[in-house]
Length: 358
Image (cartoon, rainbow, N blue to C red; front, top):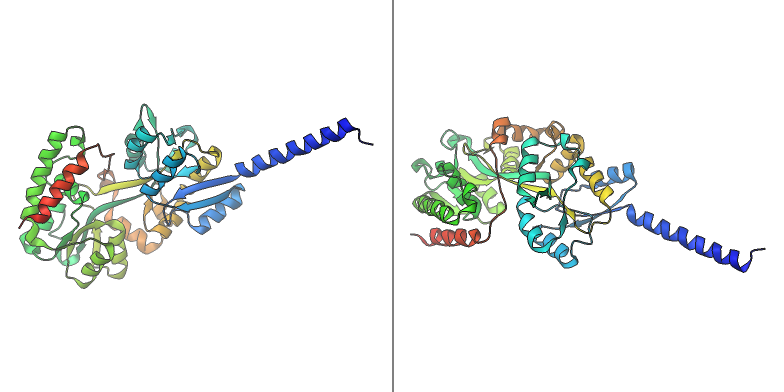
């Protein structure tokens, strides 16, 4: 017969077991906030099967990630995927991430140049806050008939292309033209006077180029339509759009400009109050395996920082990528650093004047 004491002890012991079980269940969940296409169903299923960890996906974008994590002080998610240039300023202001423990990251799986760029772009007070995940670039989309004339951004202003060119009136155009003019806008980020001088030179070049522009594209579908019909024969745009067009029409190519494509990297970043660090690092190392990373590329259309993953990507997409980027072109990508305060206002004023110029 159980005594009053033994019954109480049994109840307490049972409650302890239930509490431990509840903690274990909670610990076996990874709450991931990410972009569409970055966590395909088959990748999630395989990760869950191999690890026993349940993955809860929240689809988002940079602004939404920042908003959600800021509201909770870095709680609610175990792993996030902000762009590399949207980490340092946010971390300095809101303290929503924690430093990456690179001893837990299988860095041998990652492209060296992207690893270096991400560690530098997310560095704050001696710590790095991001791991490279998925990347893409802006460059040139050209038809074969003008390919010999268009090797860099400023070639869009050649007289032979008048009326058959398109690009956006956005900061990537300013940055790309600056590099093609032999200037280094990213190096001038620390000197606003030097940056304004670069922007003045770019402004004049883009005003002089206005007669070449059929239209300033504002949406991806609009640009793809212009390129499909041949109304536009050369454009500044993103690589995934160029590869999509190449799959439809092999005479259209995405070209890495001679001065360097402009690159963005979406990272892995760990929220400050993540409750499952083990699962977060397991996911990073799992999805950066080449064969797994290739599935993310097939799903999203964007390549990853996983070394050798292109071997396993769908043949048409793989071949288009290799046509655009050899090793030298990859090493020449100009990765976006964090934007210092005040520069976006300068750029906005430049873009407004270009738009208004006759």
